[in-house]
Length: 450
Image: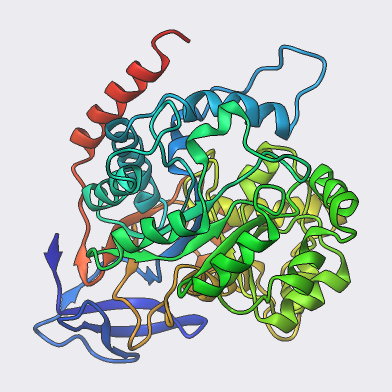
């Protein structure tokens, strides 16, 4: 990765809008030391041909599920839903060894870089050996993910997951969940093992309310100093089960009993009431939406207008990896709302933020940084020196006025038109050939009997 000091872009997305003639200076610490607009290019600057945007954070990823993409698109019985998909997904979870996980994750992370992301939050619950016993190094699978992120050149926020039981009424996990079992202490020890590694930020996660006991959630939350993520209200069956078991809806329970604050990131939050949305906003917690996965699994539509209007921090995630580029995620987020409400530009705020793409992008930029554990994110002084350069020759953007270029990127580009990605002040150029070869070898081992 080649380090840069000065970059000059004809246009860049700064403070929520396009600005002309932008000079960007990266410090030795890999953060932006200067962002100046309407500035002639100095002789020492690298002049970019294309416009630049902040790279986004992929705020929710299960890397191992990249090996499962395309393997669940058939229905062999009268009923197929999230829960039957989950049972089939466990098949790959029970096969992957650390070296295979590294190969699969590196391929995914290289694809995420090409899709406009520079940081990925790994909601990681695949911890133990195939028989469910801990590896000699309990963090072996987590280290495989960190190695994969280093192979690709992407930043990693590792979120080891608390996973104790198969459901609200269950005492333990099912046999096919044996690799996931953790206590709060084990989660903290895995996080500690990776803390301080270059390119890695650590936090923690609770798989879901059904999968963790209230006392364990409280113990983990009290000890966690980084971002704290949780799956919540993804499925209506989950909401119904939570009501029966606790007397509360899932988000309602979190708001009443979990001490929600700015560390908390509620993943999916698809089935939320107006009162729950108000409670999340009052707590300062964030929400991570995964549009392509939520569509693929038949989860339903979130109440996007209310989340936006309440000012809740939002982020975007790739989750099951059926889509690995943020422009397509934002496209389907808005398109789903258009189908639901039967009107256009649902995410827009007339008079304030009239462009759906710009409003969504800005919210995902800021919220994604928080979800990954960063105080600042974007083209601003003090933020990590990350960006994506648009391909100046991309036909989908050709001829569009600059003010509409982000609209064209989200709603009119068939593929992510990114030329290069900068991470921490360095252009990232992963060895895609070698990464792909290792990925193909792992896939052949995993699916040779399929």
